[in-house]
Image 1 (cartoon, rainbow, N blue to C red):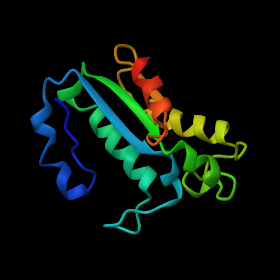
Image 2 (cartoon, rainbow, N blue to C red; image 1 turned 90 degrees about the vertical axis):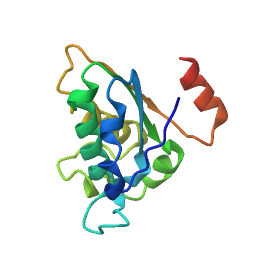
Image 3 (tube, rainbow, N blue to C red; image 1 turned 45 degrees about the vertical axis):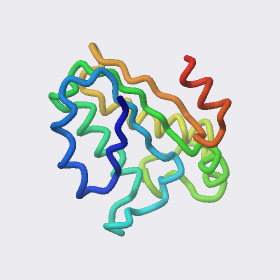
Length: 142
């Protein structure tokens, strides 16, 4: 069975307890959201919110042994956007090249470093474009 738990803050507390004992979580974060804010709080960056949610799920006691697949989605939008809007908008400490590969790798690392159980828990990450059926098929076949 698969569930889409939604993304708005007000919905999250309602579902976390329902998933104790699951074997795999697919977490999707939009790469292209690094320069956007939440609809419900225009002071909060969407990428920071995704990182915060990922941290709370990845390290939650319910999911101590649960595999996590991280889809960094909208890579096509990110590839175009990163040419115009520097990643330091979201990550002020980032001083690397503003290229798709470098900025994308940096974002991926921000997620992976949140895993406090790295010695026993691996995060499987993929950069995806959900509208590219070949890309999605390749990822699911992997």
